[in-house]
Length: 132
Image (cartoon, rainbow, N blue to C red; front, side, top):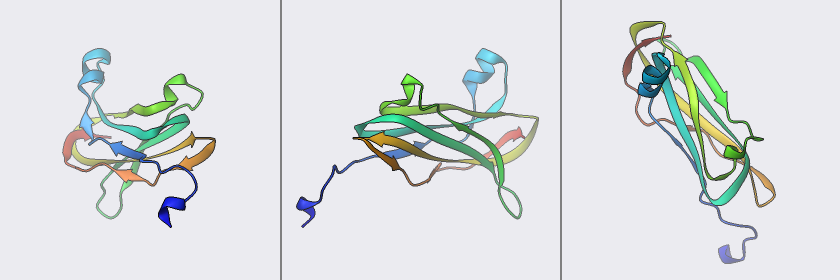
């Protein structure tokens, strides 16, 4: 019966990088910041992708929102088999050790249908000397 299923079988997923202190921002812009990168990958061409990446910090009783960034679906870089969001960062205010993690999801048009992914989380959370 599975062979008779209508529509394409996609292998689409979100890959979320681990939080890190961005060497690029430090070297190019003089900013010390925690950063999380993510990619939306699919075996079908994705159009008008909105890839949302959110950084959270681990709290004693609950986790705290730090920063969120969404790609612009009108930008030509927001279409393709791979769409990247490498713009999500927050400047460090201190060198206090803080543990962060990233969460990402995307919405994309694939073969004329609007599809959404489930949320994905970064694999590793380790303390960084970056208080926000």
